[in-house]
Image (cartoon, rainbow, N blue to C red; front, side, top):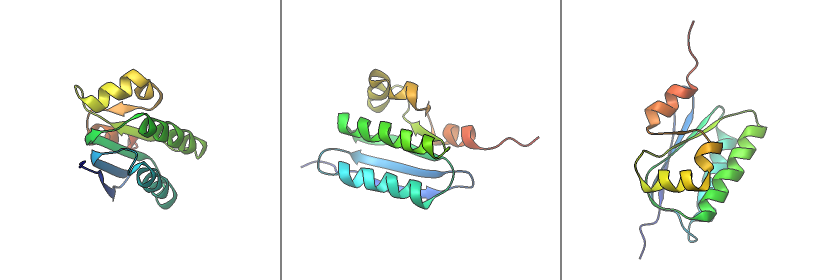
Length: 120
């Protein structure tokens, strides 16, 4: 029996934050994709996806992230990932090159800071 992922979505002033806890695998990858696509459709502005509490994901998840990033980019929006160092999620993102293609932060606060407009 696996620890299937739970997804929490919340809106902040400048972004939608999606937090993943547990395992993303073949059993729930379709749900993961749908949740991300709905968040992009239902919310304006940047998307911050936190993998801080994700305990497992595979190449299918990486493909979903890459495809979503392309879609968001076409919409002229930003997507940021959160995966602290050191950690398994960050290591997988680094090895796959995803963390180079999609801005990856250590904390949700850092990601939100990166998308918050500066006043001046």
